[in-house]
Amino acid sequence: DSGVTQTPKHLITATGQRVTLRCSPRSGDLSVYWYQQSLDQGLQFLIQYYNGEERAKGNILERFSAQQFPDLHSELNLSSLELGDSALYFCASSRQSGGAGDTQYFGPGTRLTVL
Amino acid sequence: KNQVEQSPQSLIILEGKNCTLQCNYTVSPFSNLRWYKQDTGRGPVSLTIMTFSENTKSNGRYTATLDADTKQSSLHITASQLSDSASYICVVTSFGNEKLTFGTGTRLTIIP
Image 1 (tube, chains in turn cyan, yellow):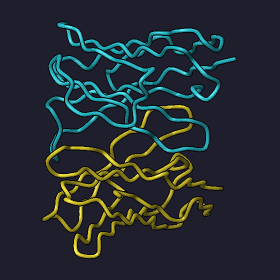
Image 2 (cartoon, chains in turn green, brown; image 1 turned 45 degrees about the vertical axis):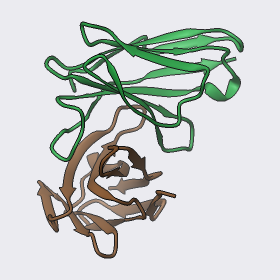
Image 3 (cartoon, chains in turn yellow, orange; image 1 turned 45 degrees about the horizontal axis):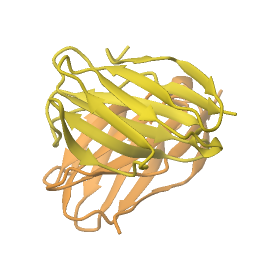
Image 4 (cartoon, chains in turn red, cyan; image 1 turned 90 degrees about the vertical axis):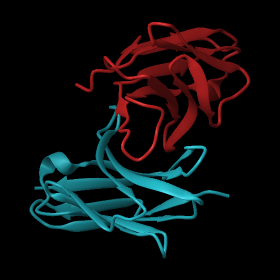
């Protein structure tokens, strides 16, 4: 158990809908990262927040948005869902803003299925 | 374009044998390189992390090497166990913007 929690574990929805994924980082961690992992594809970095502010941006679509709240939990919002958005979405947290000594701890993931 | 390539894509070995996984990258400027183990359907778990000045780092039966000149890394697994069956992912961080570039992983299967 990494100490990172994600809810829900599974989510099934229809195309065009909007969903929110939630992540609670490990106690004391200031950074939250979001990743997408589609079937047969590697992990794709979406976005990082550090202490409430956006720190780094990866391959995040405009239909997706995220935020980190004052209590440091984070939400990833996915809108106008398409079939291709079906994937595992992982959240990770780390103590600081990144760097060599800043290990990321991954949550168990949310499996999103868009029908 | 920053890229991380891993080989082989998949590997099957007998329990107790050793194996080596490869990672080549073009990420520049370089900050650090991590190896992760990911069990099916679960989040990745960090195995090792190496900076520019580190050549070798061990974590139990896992030993990672880094050659920053040739931009190559390897992960050596000694005396493999059934629980080593997983995907192994190489991740390189860019210096400055801390952007992460992920390899697509090597799927390792250990058979009894």
